[in-house]
Length: 260
Image (tube, rainbow, N blue to C red; front, side):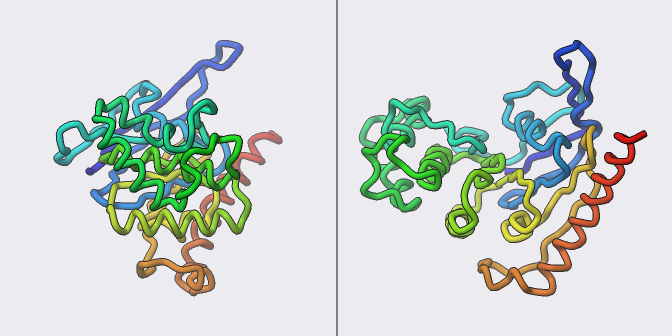
């Protein structure tokens, strides 16, 4: 599925009623099967952009279009949030089945599909546990399994691993890449972590400070499958340094404006 964002702008009102421009003239395309990361300084509108693609936030102007055939009943998008966003009164399995219930799938098919993704995410044996009985990493695995279970045309991820410790985050990134390399779903992945973006993505879209505009599209020229041994690869370091230079210049400019 191809995602086309065309001259997207988003303006909202703050608590005092003042107009605040979050995004302005954002244009890019996520190619079919592409893993696209979106990165930028704090407050640049990354999550707002993802919410607009998901249809959760209306655009002030511009448009978002999807190109490519879908199977009947296949959802256009599914979202994995930074917060685990699980229903505390539902077990892990029931949380994974939630989207399948909304699609109206028969019970047997729901159970079989949920079981497949529970196993893929390493949750076997924990399917009857409630969220409060699971670790942070396991709760996020449930969230990812829930999103993948509906087989979306586009998977949207909003800083899904930011609340996890470094070791768990690395393992989760590797697990997600393994699943993506098998399914090849188009992924749009928001993160504030440069190394994470370079490790995961085919391409990194860098946004400017608010209002967010596309500052650069940086290809990641690293072979797949990705492994943590690549973190010291000269190509990895050079790509991360290039992105940091772009983001740092934006942060410094914002700091100067704030002192003016």
